[in-house]
Image 1 (spheres, rainbow, N blue to C red):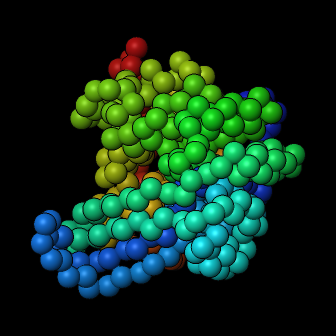
Image 2: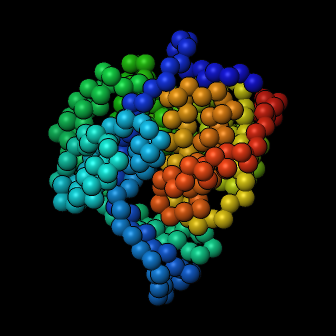
Length: 331
């Protein structure tokens, strides 16, 4: 296995700490823990919490805990920004969000004792052309002194997949490393803009490819098709089945230990944060995938994102198994 990560540049990678996370459609997550969700009937919630979230916001929280200097941007509704402001202050993130009229959406997540999660996602704010102009000025201003950009989550009203893809393309042309974690139309458009890394899960990959992917081999074959688009890193997350990563024609797969699943909410965001930090710290391939997989595995054993215990993280890393995959299956 090679020990360096190849990207847009051939220079020796240097450790970095500065990163921008982009959350175009953040949300306040109202999470309820309950024994069983009774569809069409009354369900009693045992515990609940309301906290600032959205995929990019979750990534920012984990990156900050890992030691990154995080700048957060995107669109926030003016009417209910308090919990976001509090979070950004708590994690030491630089707040470069564009404030827009209205209230940021509230998403409901019902976490059952079995580990099952039911998501009820509401539409976000409506973004105006003036809001977009302010965001573009902010985003490309940040490109002056940042190399890593994580764009994660869905799109609000007023932002088309094509517009979002144009931002990715422009950052790519500026030599920036864009990590894209989205789905549906936003993912489909973004893939053609040459993001530096994508992290679809098996379900998102199935939706994009247009066929049901039931096995890791099928996921590998589908991801290999995407490599033709010039994407340097394709990471496929498969839950308990582990993570597969294609970089420079080489496949590497990680196998996490069996975890007691409390909630899968934020596990994918945590994986993205681990992948980003691992690259920023110039980890070798094996170390990077083990580290990222361990972070994500621990995330399912808790409610909410964040690193609860460094010792637990160290112990989990020791239990991760790695395997080099043959390219024959995808050729």
